[in-house]
Image 1 (tube, rainbow, N blue to C red):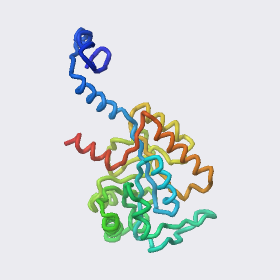
Image 2: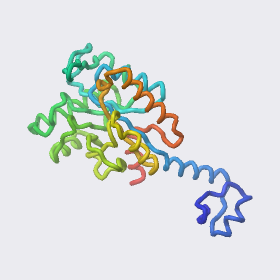
Image 3: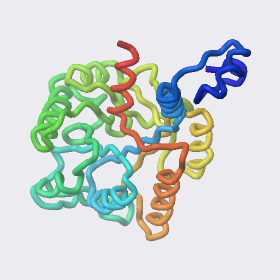
Image 4: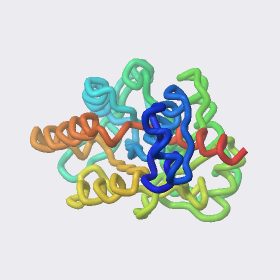
Length: 266
């Protein structure tokens, strides 16, 4: 590594010059490996997180697969029926949830996280009800998808110390909030994981660029039922396409990022 120029000597031809600056030469294969590791560290990691398991997720998942984009979907297993079912009204729009029979197909290849059993305000619950919302939901998701469920997403973004403790006790390693922060990762508290912005935020690209300049993590979130027009779908696809094509960025998942952090802390 050349301390003066902060580069790695790639071959013997530059070894003499580098030694004059106090550096050392190394075999090309080793140099390439270290360079690739350094580049991976500098890469912007982009994470997206979508809530509630609504029918628009089917279209969203297909869009993301087309760009090989990773994503986390946060589900409430107690609110799904065998077939698609009406859930609530958002303004003049009916919001429907996917049916149990299609969940595995829709979300195949994506990370699944727990969003509680029935989407209550967890801070209002008695201890036994809180435990049921967290443990039963995680168990149902693990049984259905046949994969460990490590992540949690707070309904309405609400929590308190008792809720956080219950989330951890139920077996979750991280919990996503809706609090916007400048530096998403590594979090000071994995059970209070902040976000960069919503997918529809007017400041989306400025916040993306800020995270990109720092080589950090950019985490955006939302609900696919918010995509109410062709223009909104087109705008989201343009964002996904741009990020996929960005040579300084790569798609990541929260579980993968946390696993890397755990290894580095070990």
